[in-house]
Image 1 (cartoon, rainbow, N blue to C red):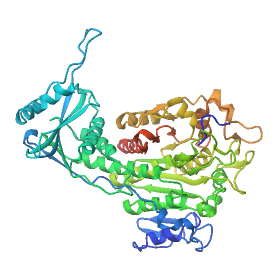
Image 2 (cartoon, rainbow, N blue to C red):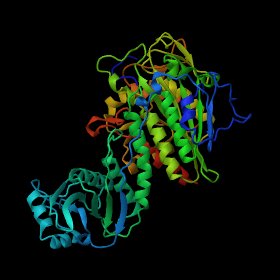
Image 3 (cartoon, rainbow, N blue to C red):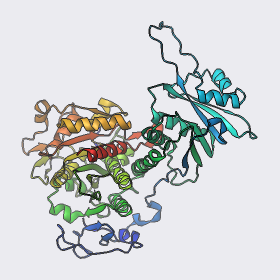
Image 4 (tube, rainbow, N blue to C red):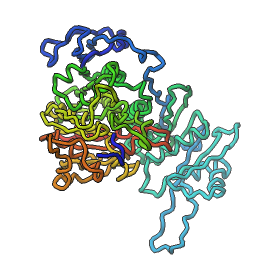
Length: 574
């Protein structure tokens, strides 16, 4: 990833075969495969997997083959979700949560109008009567206004059927954000250390609201527990007979979000191109996707000179792994789409070394695009949407310094024949994406979305809450904006300004330069990528800002919910 103020498949591993030895489905590639399977020690060997069959070559063991560097994943919170049509006051357990609504500001209210304490709902009033006025007393003592982030709890006693009761603010009626309610429930569950919780949801709650609430709750409960243990018990939705289908969908989507978080948060000596490829094959084997891993010789045979320009600076053990997973629905798809994720497992900046306030210590998150891509593959594999075929593509590598690394001034040739003058080796992500986009378009898909931690300039423009989105296709842009609105993965459409800024990436000695001037850096990066998609509807999403949030513990899993919703919306289009 280029900083905001900087100037302008191979040996597939014995360990991977060992990892899947229990499946024992090894089969040779068919003679009709685009790339032939060579001898085990050939640098051009490719690993493919189709519905259970795998064939991988060997590689010499390295110091990174120790279990100390094993890629681990956070377990999803193991609690049950159920519904009860009984009254909230009749439930028994650790914590009963009563949502309350805020009073809206009346029309014509004076400037000094103060929001009053929240009124009790009918359900809360019944619980107040059953608990000897504990609910109304809590509202009065805390001056509870029921804003979207308000919550308060009181202990009733060990001998009572309900040990504690809590209030959560829903905001004004008609403006409820159920994702926020789920986050409040997660905070209460952790704060109260309860094993069982019930929430008195509105009677008219539907599956979509339950899904949003559960996604918010699972998001809030996420903790990097790969090296810790712990569990939580149950959640009951009282006062409703709504199904738990929304909760089940939420679990599947959040499983993908958590995979993304774990990948992005893992140190770069754990998430390497090799381990990322292994993980991708794991996802394929677990959920019935097709997997293809292209190694160095195969990548070179395809003419991916831009990608290899970045990858060649790493040691052989961290060489390139071009990952291609495919989800195919049971029936003939009506749509085919591709998701391309930037996969720089570590970015040193190359010879334009990251120094000073360059965030080099956080460049493990420079594979945030591939984390979102593979997290989406996990979720799609669980959800199994109809009518849409999805290709997940990651050109994984590192950007390192060595005697083989690309230098400022080098000229690279991408797989579409375009030549690129390397002005700055720290603008490497767009080089890997260039060849990945060419590969994606050759699949003859209906749309391509790439996701990348591409520029610090986008962070300067939009901060850390919004991703930038560029697309010359109105329908695709609107579809992504609708998915953003539906999921809370916030994006902001940005201008391409091709006439004004396109000349800034033209080279005097090659077709393109890999950077333009300091100003407009996020735009010129998008324009660079546009050069590698000729006719397919395409969008670029720069997630450099929202990929990481120190206040929330680091990796956010941004992009998975957005992409899942977009994929499903494509399948729904006939």
